[in-house]
Image: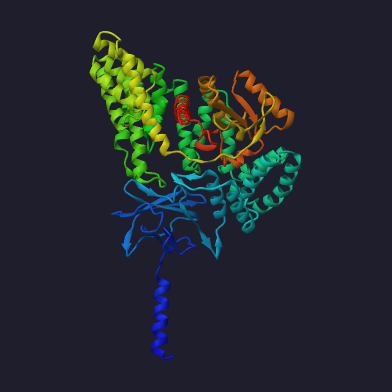
Length: 630
């Protein structure tokens, strides 16, 4: 072959290797496929691909979320450049010890995250995923969401990633801890504890000079009946590193157990003097200190603490002012504190934005913070008789929050009534009711305004029903957009009151499945409100509420006795079942987790955690009513 032809062939191959093309049906890609820390990475998006959601977009932005071993996650928002049929953006993988990339694409408010399953890539070094990379993916596949990025997964997929992590790094303390936790959930008892105890020795020996790893493993000595060994190791580290992670953790436990409020404050202040505290721990302790100051009326100390902070924020001022104003204590001083919080919320800029939030999400956080402290300020003004100023504060909070808070909405309507502005009270009340953003307080103030304007309550009930029907219709529309629609795993489980319950035999009913445990604080906080929902539908044969007790530390008769005592002492009458690890099949990562299942056995809605009783009742009843109407 002529030398010139060889050169041209070599050049063509080189150019082909330098170019990245996606298959016709491939929406997104990343190059190199195995990115490394400090390396330039290119991410691609193909709007013309089948299933792509950003076709004909004028501009596309790549969102890259990077998870790290010790740093907070970082979000990169990169403007993409169009190259033929592809859009691409470049970035250098920043930070120390990145573990995983999640990426998705945006055009305006439209997001393409592959239908709730963001693209991802492990981070590599020396030809294999770095330590913690598979573990991070395993964790996210269980959580299914990470800082507003969704990633679809199953317990089986998560377990496979965990196995890969342990195959590559068998002594990874965090990975072994997750494995042992899953093993105890799947098969609680002495035989599992014995196996963990043996593995623990090997993992501890490999990590005994790493304080972070030791902190993870210490709990397992206690869980495998080696409390004395755990205490010995803890004391050794506290002597060796008195400001280290274990010393801080132990001090926090001691502080939490402290019964004397003054002594608890002193211990928090001592902890805050530790310059080795993580930023997250420091912020948590600052908030706790403010709450403790407020609880025992050390308002001057709290105000002085806030005033000398390098970066005071509206949230801390709100944490101090709200309980004082709500309970009518130190009102003039509390109102001034709230006013300072409002001023802080107004001038908080992008320089305070957490690394993991997008600019849009940060703006929403700021709006919510401003609305919250304005609400506190408005209540303080209202209680001190400054109702015109209170009205202005509530009106601004209502505008900032776009009418999304039933509490703020009700207080604004009340202030209008108090100030004789009945037309405005009615206008706002009707807008909130028709948007399903009203509570019982707003309805009462609405009725007062109606009577004041019209001279009687005639026509009020008809108007109220009309508006509530509109609100329900709008709520149904929004709920339909969030519907999950996936088959619910079938189960047959024993009931606390005898007999067995099979989920697949409940077809034709709307079924609530709530996973809980007696040791779970948020679960117990949610139960009085679950009881209210149960009582609301108690006479409806097409609604069934099942509370599945799971992840209990006790087993056998001891578990049954524990659960029975808890249910009876609190007079709960909804049906309780004993879970047999179906919690894993449902993909639950934390409790309480509720599933609302439609008449055809499909999971329609899911909620995790407890964010307040009234919100929970409103959410559950809207979801149940929507499914009943089908």
